[in-house]
Image 1 (cartoon, helix red, strand yellow):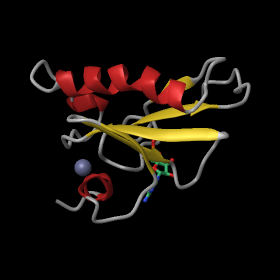
Image 2: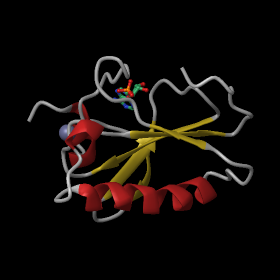
Image 3: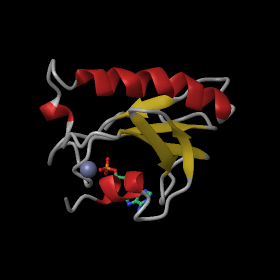
Length: 112
Ligand code: AMP
Ligand code: ZN
C-alpha cells in the first residue's frame, strides 16, 4: 500500500520513534508545531476518523492508552493537546489516521 505512515511503521521510511507497542507506533512530527509534537498512530491502516468502526476501534483505544505514557515520557507534566484532522475540511494531509500530541508550551486557545 502506498501509505507513508505504513512505511514508517514498517521501518521502510526513517522516523524518530518515541513509542511502540503491539497496536501503536509514535514518532516525532517532521515539521513540529510545538516543543513536543509527536504523531501517535495505530499500526493498522485506518484512513481517517471517518472509518472508525466497532470492529477496528480497539486500535483507537490503544492509541489513547498510549497517550499518557508518551506524555509522561516527554515530560508533559502541565498538560498537552491531542488533535485529529479528518478529511478535506479538517485539513488531513496523510490518509492514515493519526493523533497529534502537542505540548511543552502554553498552546493557543484557538481551535480553528
Ligand atoms: P495532518 O495534516 O493532520 O494529516 O498531519 C500530517 C503530519 O504528518 C504533518 O504534521 C506532517 O508534518 C507530518 N509528516 C509528514 N510526513 C512525515 C514524516 N515522514 N515523518 C514525520 N512526520 C511527517
Ligand atoms: Zn497506512
